[in-house]
Length: 445
Ligand SMILES: Cc1cc2nc3c(=O)[nH]c(=O)nc-3n(C[C@H](O)[C@H](O)[C@H](O)COP(=O)(O)OP(=O)(O)OC[C@H]3O[C@@H](n4cnc5c(N)ncnc54)[C@H](O)[C@@H]3O)c2cc1C
Image (tube, rainbow, N blue to C red; front, top):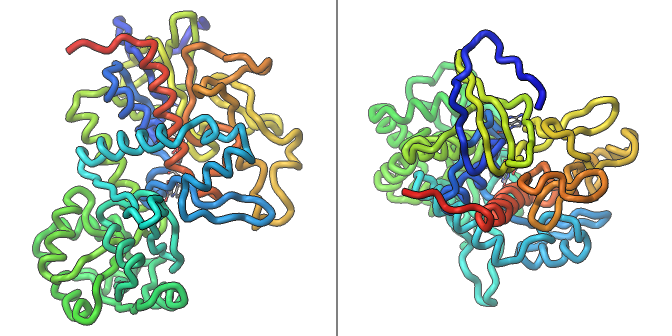
């Protein structure tokens, strides 16, 4: 092991021993932490803010098979079966339907206990489940598998052909109800638009969702807001609002609104940073704290593998702590998460320098057509693994028997095009941690 520079702070002389280190706190890192908790594996999690702050807050599973002629699937599992035949190295090819379903159940169960309840699709007549749809701020319909309760009335209204009124707020950028309604009219049976001024911010100029979400936690502002919405609730079945209904008490705020308006209300995710994504992160971290679980919101600069596991150092304030973990789940994401980076014209994995599957030269990263329906090869770069999601070395052997990977760092998937971001993250983390659990005695107490 190489010597480590500690900076000017002190080093806690007692190393922290743990069964598992989860490196990354995005969707895959959260899922790995939840699976470890549910299996009684002691763990610590490290990682800073992730792509979650940009996410709609919905859990996508699968809906599009990219290719020269992309193919859409209403039933994600039917799509995954076709995908697995076409792409045997795709992460979903290493998972059964049952594993994916169990992984979602565990994830949504935990998030429900943290205050974010998800709704899956309603069963249709043919004993298969179809993706639901949500309205996006661009005025399109996005297919997804699980929607948070805050958006559920919208997905039901779309499925049931109900009358929807989208309400926007004067000064809120990137959310135009009239433009959204116009774009949606060919797709939905009845959609109208209305605009209100936000109480107390009528002349404030540009408004930010996060600010409005905090404002609505104030009962006086909420009451005025409800008063402004009332005239628009009359002749529709459901009202759609930008996602601003509070950061922490959003369920209570929505219920208050629905009782006062006597109509279901749903949120529409806004452009980044998205309140719906931030809520998920806040709820997860709050629950981790309640359960006394360890999360360090820091980046790790180096990890030292040895035969017993992994050693790394986390620095918080002026103190540095040595962590010794028997197993490690690498959930550091792709370029945005910083799990992958670029050095010397090559895509590199940043912590272990694992081999990265990628086009031979940089000129192969992108196709000449920006909107190429098959996607860009760089968006499938990532690390190769065995069937349990253990990364492989250059010779194709397992790099370290106790190292696992999960989420968007995995190769041979293009989650953006496939609409499979959360599904790959949650299900790969589930399988990785389940494999670890088979080799780990449960913690006592
Ligand atoms: C704009 C946008 C919208 C999206 N919308 C949706 C959506 O509607 N539905 C959906 O299902 N998915 C959506 N996603 C995708 C989803 O949010 C996840 O990004 C994706 O599933 C991958 O998650 P991940 O955990 O693998 O990686 P990331 O979310 O990138 O997380 C990587 C984590 O690793 C940490 N990390 C990296 N390096 C280190 C290090 N050295 N030390 C410690 N920690 C480290 C980072 O701090 C971060 O916490 C969206 C993503 C974006 C960008």
